[in-house]
Amino acid sequence: MARWAQPPMQREQIRLFSPNLDAMIPDDHPIRLFDDLLSACDWTPWENHYCRVHGQPAIHPRVVAGVILYGLSHGIRRSRMLEYMLASNIDFMWLAEGRTIDHSTICGFRTKFRRELKQLFKQLFTIAIKAGLANIETVALDATQVKANSSRHKTATAATITERMARLDQMIEHMLAEAEQADAEEPGLYGPIPTDKLPKDLADAKQRRERLTKALAAAKARDESPKAKAKARKGEKVKPAAVPIADPESKVLPNKEGGFAPNYTPTTTTESHGGFIADAEVLPGGEDPQQAVDTIDRIEEAFGQKPGQMLADSAYDSGQTLAGLDKRNVEAFIPFKQRGDTCDTDNPAVRDDPTQPVGESEWDKLPRGYRNGKLDRTAFVYDGAADCYYCPMGRKLEFCRIHNRAGSAGPVKSRYYQCAGGDCPLADQCTDSDSGRRSVAHDDCEHHRQAMDARLASSRGRKIYAQRKWIAETPFGIIKQRMGLRQFLLRGLEKVRAEWLWACTAFNLAKLVRNGVAVRAYIAPIKG
Image 1: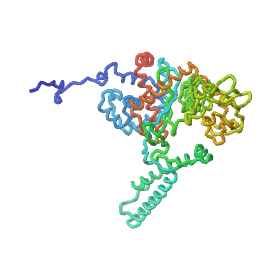
Image 2: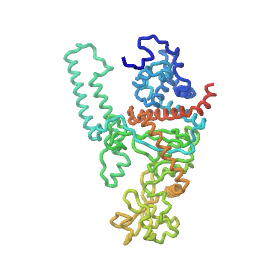
Image 3: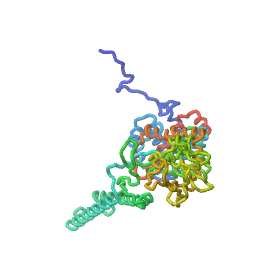
Image 4: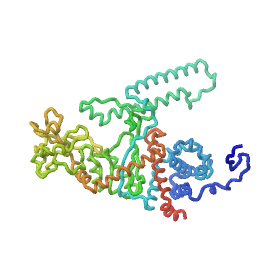
């Protein structure tokens, strides 16, 4: 017989296991610190949701929340898998103290305590600050896209939804008529008809109509949005908005891997010292520049202090955003994609006497727009005393009109300056206008943009902004790859926000566990 290793324990052999769960978990197992951190938090707001006077005693919310967060930190998101782990994995058994929790209980728990979850998120981040692991002096804001729980093939415009609702109404009326006719022909044959419960087919039709009603409201709101109205006023062709039927609060957006699908836009604001998430939000559409200001306000409200520096990419390059950050004394580092290479210190357009033309040998060095390759607005120099702009050829652009538009934080008033036209050796590189006249806009936020340009052009600014990528994008990589959150399980903006906050809380909690020495030194007095 071949020589093979023998099993250490026969299946039929009587075996004496460790006497308790605690003995089966090593003293240095991360689950112990994980549980200690949760025990150090205040769970009173969670407990207030329970009636502890009568009925079966409920499982403490710390246990259920711990199971969800521990599962997320190991890439387990689905409630049925968590239910399975509670019955098969020793570390899950130890955390739940041998309790078995039904998957439906876990599902309901995830969406019930969003306000309390924010407080837990705040408490864990505060622990990181007090343990010396986090510091909100410098934060970086970024956004990503996560697919909604809705098919990209199940979208419809307002007109299509209206047609479907009309057909569905006819079907419901037909079903009701058939039911009434059957009742009239055979009264009492099947006993009294229940009035509190609709037949399954009719109930399903009613639910479908409710979903279509929500989708129709969302489609009409997007068709009448300020952005759509602005395009219509300009004479541009505006396509009717197509909304996902299953989750109308999501929005069809381009995917990074290609194609289009219903998506949400989660954001995180991450501090630079330890990489902890200080603020988390979910937007129904694309990135909103105003979030750079809103996240500062939320951080100050939650932790009693506001960051000194904000790093963000060019998706947040609104002048109103810079104005809002300057008003809050927050130093912003946000490049402007529509201002060419704003970090270029060799811009020949910046000269002592703007009335003199730039030398022909330096024309190729003039900043260009990233879209059309034409001369960028940073090639034009503003003279505040004369209230005019000078082009690279030293010609004056005079004030011509005022334009009001809707900005991310309110109305924006812009002053436009235009050249006189005529023969110009740079005309073909300057504008596509048939008249050959170039216009430059100047709004109330222009001095904030100029200050930003100078800040990013300095060696200090470049060094600080170079940190943005690894600070801001690391959480997304871990949450998507490690936790597997590439598509939301829940539907509706509020539920999706709760799901994202669970993931961000688990991210911070797992990071605290990895910094075990500093965290144990902080929570040891709390444990007593």
